[in-house]
Image 1 (cartoon, rainbow, N blue to C red):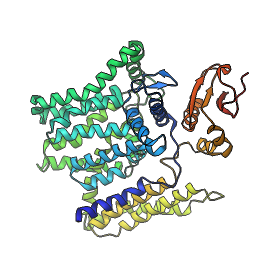
Image 2 (cartoon, helix red, strand yellow):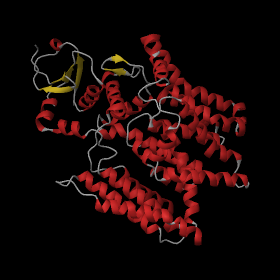
Image 3 (cartoon, rainbow, N blue to C red):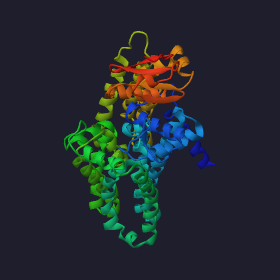
Image 4 (cartoon, rainbow, N blue to C red):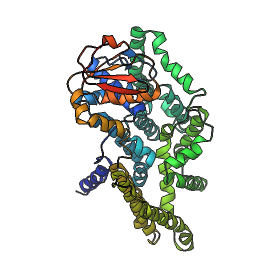
Length: 486
């Protein structure tokens, strides 16, 4: 009975973090493109080829598109079906983090980490990759050879050659503390079985499309490892990761020092130190050496930020006397500042709903942190520290911050005359010349919004008369409700 009540409580706490009153609209790159590729898989019946308007495009692997396409085939092409596999992967990541840490507090901090929460709402490769990495770590930690070996092949299908970095980061734990797995036939068998789908996909792709097309996978890696628009300096994650995991990322260094102190005292085993500090620090170093740097690469480090932050939170929640009188200054000052900022922020004329939710997020966060400064040591103080970010994330989600990425295009497609024109039949696209980056983003969103999707034409004369057509004019797309060939 108690376990059922706890499960019900977790569901009730999770629902406001999943369901939103705000509309969902896709982030064009990469979320919208993955959704569009999954739609093409279902409509064409070709589960082998990642395509772009009928042309094979092997600049990325196909794992996440398979996940989305499977859900779309079951539930139709809609935002719920597209995001359902990602929510399941996010739930798996939280569960594995809980099992690894044996701490509900760590799992709660992970869920309330802005970077993690944001990518739990995006239909991209990143959350499935994190879930598979945690599966591999859990297998190593608990000496389960099947889980420790099987994760790598599916991870390659999800993220391509980038899985080499987390695999390298696991080597110290494997070689120093889990060497017996290397002598276990089940580990090698699981490794081979995990790679079978990836190798089969690569082999069939080479047979159908040839090396010149499939080698785009390697070419994309070489491009990302060079000087591109995404290239950043080696210190990028030292500021980006704390900023995107705040407030927990600011507490993580203190938690790491506490873990080191426990290890020196003999209170923490070496394998735990390698798991919670060695793995993330080595992965951080490897990611920092790779020239392309983005916030979503840092998502792989969020469970370890959560663990070290939870270590610091537990220590702070137990502080007494003079130490707490100084320690309470941070929540007191931060809570007051956020509360005043939320109360003083002017609402735009017309009462924009999102602005109201932003104000509510600031008020909830500030009030909880301010109240925590007067709490005695123990559970209540800790709960207030967690309740503030929980209320803030719920309010931000209801305001559309994490899910409404393209509101202008979403509103355009919802206009009655546009929706009626698109519902009449397949919607075609016409672009006589090259498509720029901004126009490509619009094209992805407009294609997702078409109930029935036609082909992309380079010659306007090839488009049948009378159909609805999005035509590229300059850097934007114009709708023709009944096409008349020139």
